[in-house]
Image (cartoon, rainbow, N blue to C red; front, side):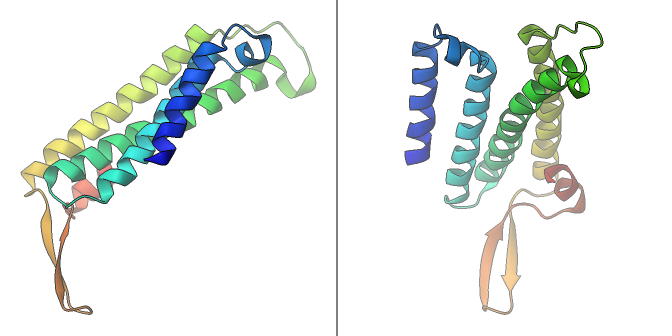
Amino acid sequence: AVLGVVCIACIVWLRKNKTFKTVKALSVDMTTIMTIGLLMIVCSNIALTLNVNSVTCIAWQWLFGLGGILAIMSPLLKAYRVSRVFHGGKMLRAVKITDKMLMAMLIKCAIIEILICCGYSVLHEIFGGRTLYYNDEELRIERRCNDNALTGYLAR
């Protein structure tokens, strides 16, 4: 929860100071999206601490998957822009990659992840939702998210 508050504070600070040159160089929108992705990952870890049922399993998949895409793709796309502009240290020709173009690529990746999460949500419920796992080593019954091979494939 503390990390969530820190992420929100970072977003507020970023938006408040976006007129400064040094902050503007961070690509405020992409950095905000990355921070939202990190916040989603933090929330996914909170979902893991709750009792395991279909809602928490699906929520974890959505928060971790989509948060991971937002948190990873934002800096990756910014690095891609830098590498394309300074192609190996040689300025062969002027390349202009705008924030709008990067945002379009990020949205495409997010849509793919949303489709994967929708598929996971449906398959998770079709294959019985959460399952009971009989842990013979510790002599206890554990509730787990669906362990069908197809849902496991989508969850990875």
